[in-house]
Amino acid sequence: MTRILAATLIPALAAAPALAHSGPHLHPHGIDAAWIVAAVALAALAAVVWFRR
Image (spheres, rainbow, N blue to C red):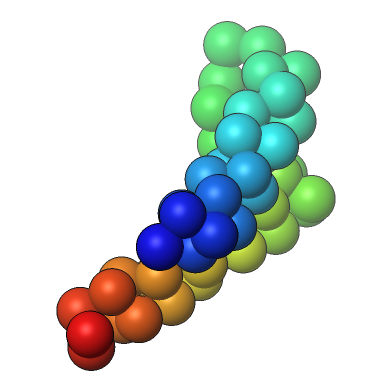
């Protein structure tokens, strides 16, 4: 579980600085959106693995 949680949180935390450059608006651009999609996909995968146990 710890590995899955780490695999989910690391991309989400990595996206935070990328979003910080946006200034007052928070809609994602390019690679920012890719990080968000990757983090959500990993979170969904972690949820599936966790609840199938």
